[in-house]
Length: 63
Image (cartoon, rainbow, N blue to C red; front, side, top):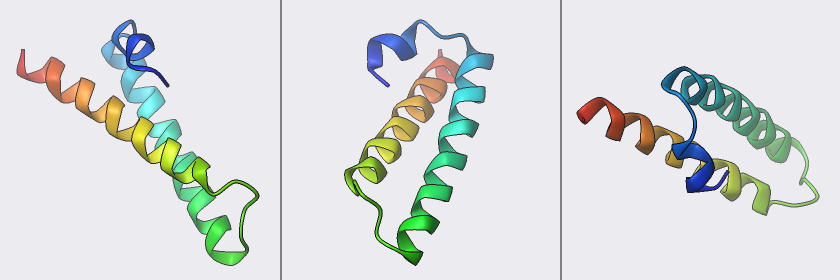
């Protein structure tokens, strides 16, 4: 998810996306631990997307 897309979401949508991406990341990480996945770069992409969403939520709380 790009930063420009994240800025357009509401706080509730950010929370929803964050929970979905965290679940997807956890599932993919567990699948990768059992047997290697086709594209391990997906893990990095998901982890960074989670961080972007969390950063945006924190930034909005501080304002």
